[in-house]
Image (cartoon, rainbow, N blue to C red; front, top):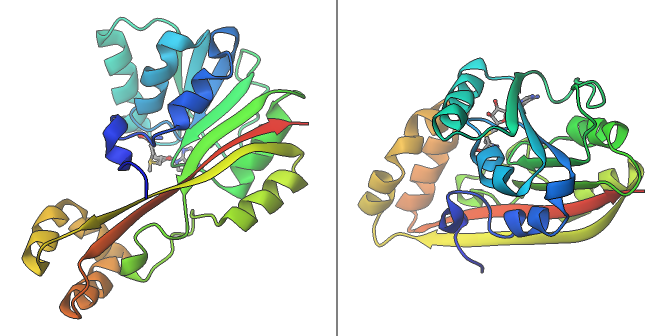
Length: 219
Ligand SMILES: C[S@@+](CC[C@H](N)C(=O)[O-])C[C@H]1O[C@@H](n2cnc3c(N)ncnc32)[C@H](O)[C@@H]1O
């Protein structure tokens, strides 16, 4: 069991280190599924240029606002679909693709097409054990084997593949429900809330957060 993912401004521990270890100051970095720009803003001081891309217009507007307020000038944000965009047509050559909790086979394929030999793809994705107590595996979650297959098939060599797992333990059913109240609307709509309540009623007190952190290099 490692550090909780929250220990690093909500970004997976290890991801920033992997990015910083690969000369981002010499690279234009693309952050796919950037949301409100957490990762973009965290790596901007170390990077030559960062493009944050997300299909959510409101999130992109918020990210751009925060960057402006903080006076960060080497970033830009785009509203686009990361699964269908051509990463070679973003106005600057992309020399690293990064992502935090937005990953799919289609994004890996786009990254393979968009990067040149030697360039890295660095990301944290949901692992299949994420929230396993809710008895529902996210369609965006990966196992280690499935990642090895898709990365190998698309022309990447894996340099780092590690699961970061943190199991949160609650003292009581009431504490779990109170702590997780912010997730309730989402979990009710995707069916998780009912199955987690059943788990709590049966005496379960855990909630697993599990991410897989990867660095792969284009062959
Ligand atoms: C779990 S959030 C992570 C956001 C951000 N990376 C972070 O860590 O704060 C996933 C994000 O991926 C975006 N997303 C999902 N599928 C996408 C796609 N096909 N193209 C662009 N963005 C996408 C969502 O809009 C959302 O902002």
